[in-house]
Length: 384
Picture (cartoon, rainbow, N blue to C red):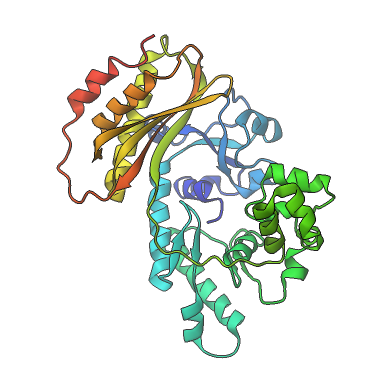
């Protein structure tokens, strides 16, 4: 999907189309809903929030996902800042995936705004010798279906495998369709930066640059033994194959999640004693959200985990396995509270997260009556 969160927000704020728009900083709440007309700029922003996404107008000024909002304010002071509304983004995610599956049912879900689609059977059904022409027609059909269902645009990359399709999907954004036919890897992919390969991150890219390997073509021409020497047999061997456009992974239409989690980074560091009430409220909210995710996805879990990042960026995790799988927010919070007692709370806290693993399908479960337990544990957490 093209600038997905920002595009969803532009459905709510159509008068902001064409403006520099940044999404991030915090979750949307009821107060934001009541103040839809009040959209602040980054010019006077003070805090340490991070950009979730932004419009292409903002990206043209060097602003990008993952950038701190203070840095973005220096680059684009007139950009408008909106808080994230993940409930709405998830709703539109379901809508666009349903629209795709109505046309092409073999879909691998890769997150809220991205999927892989196996078009083999549909291309065969089109008939004729022009395989890539048929694929382009189907891609256009998918693009229209998504727009009709959501009002949003998407970009598609079509190739023989997932690795090349991922790269191709980024080449003609927004609202692009890029078909990468057989034999076009050397002309269209090799000139791209090596970091365009999904799986080559900043550290690996810097290490490649030290070896004078900058483009995918450079990587393809590099001695495989050199790559193995510097990156290990597995990763170095994969780099060589990826640079040549080779990828044997199939589209996986279904997989069980290993865990479900929620976390939040605070606008300011919170103290376990002085900010106990705020921390406790946030902790309760995270547990309720994890429980809601479990119910919505039809899972229960036994291993509850806690994640805390301190003001010095060190991170600690603790977990506890309970006797039986649960979807109940109060039980999740109780186990999380027991984990909390096993971590030091002398430093200020910048991030708090809750995770539940060891998932299973419980079937129908009776609604939990957990309100009293939630109040009880609110009073006991974050004591010194």
